[in-house]
Image (tube, rainbow, N blue to C red; front, side, top):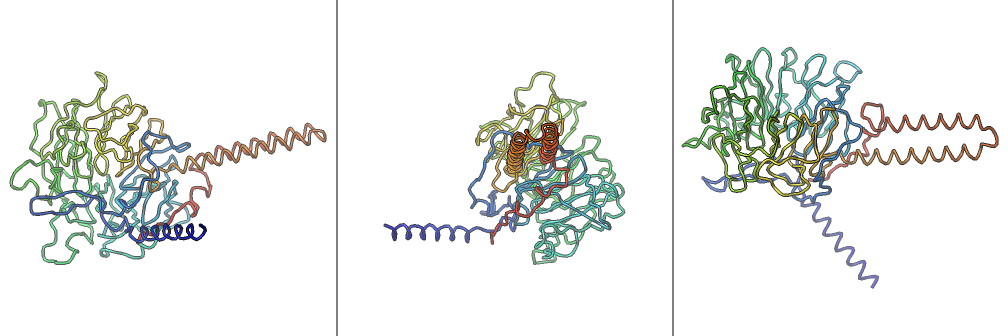
Length: 516
């Protein structure tokens, strides 16, 4: 019997070893990629290696991250980030083959010993772009493939790929005021005050706003190794209201309500209609003229880019969607999950009360959608893998549905399978898949453990004081109060990010993935 048990143990061990060897690096391939089956069919599938992992945690209902106060929230792919009230950037999730399960402070010291304060951040699929608050400089870090770091030095820079904490200043913007920045999965766009829009990174779908290099046969034709000016003379690219990026397409909203798009046109996310060229990529921003709003007073006031779908909101409380629709992310009901190549109005925008207007819209980085009303309610629909819609299930929703457990929300950020919600009080709620730590639930667990330890210390101090009461009651009472005050201070501080505490930065909270 003993030999039999040993035999079974070794069989199980060999199976597990085989599974580990079969896992591929989830950061070496685009997470939402496309492949051509034949000349007429193209599909989306996940080809990032993460399909080999079983879900570790699914958070189907929103959970508050205790003790974190934020100024802004960010999400893309399988990682997340926040800027806190001290203008510090914290980051967690899957990034450069490392899973960070609790918020980790990103430190940038450029020309001094003081960490740079951060005013804005843009997360790509496997890279980070950061803007400093005091001097408006731009920094990048992460995997360098396809030139996504904006360094102009080729496809891959091993110095960055082997050091996820390494950062570099993007010199192009040293003396150029940055107004806005966004990132897709493998490209970034920056709007500057003087020159208009710049783009860098991968250009295989023309998402950089310029044609692919036709005279090169290598893969270098699909990326921008140097930063290029998109259009510095056209005033529309200076006088704009908002810009957004999907996986490999972009929208730009002018202050006059005009809407432009460029990049990947296969699934209809550009909104230029059905015709002989409806599936072609567009390399230069083109005005969308395929829709008509309700009346002459109607205008577009907000836009959002999902992985392969697009949305816009009008001032008369209507949402239009277009692009990839398989999972209900367009919001047109269970009987309409086809791709739409022109904007289509969502007929039912949930059960929000009359007079409660839609304030803003958001789209996840794969296939879900959100809007927030003026009273802070959140509605979501589309792909719900891991519970990333916040309704307590894993089922897809094909029309907007209110998230009952959320209120007083002002912003949503959603990656592939997880979502962050920021309240008007700047608290943060998370829900969805936590396989790679992207919802940072371990942060709450660490706080709970610290609270338990502090409570035990308080109890021990109280017991010691009681045992020594016969010697000096007054002195012991004073010591007991001092010990309790100290422990309460530690307890309160451990629930915040803005203290000098190694708990949220030490390396043993970083789980290295041996995926290659």
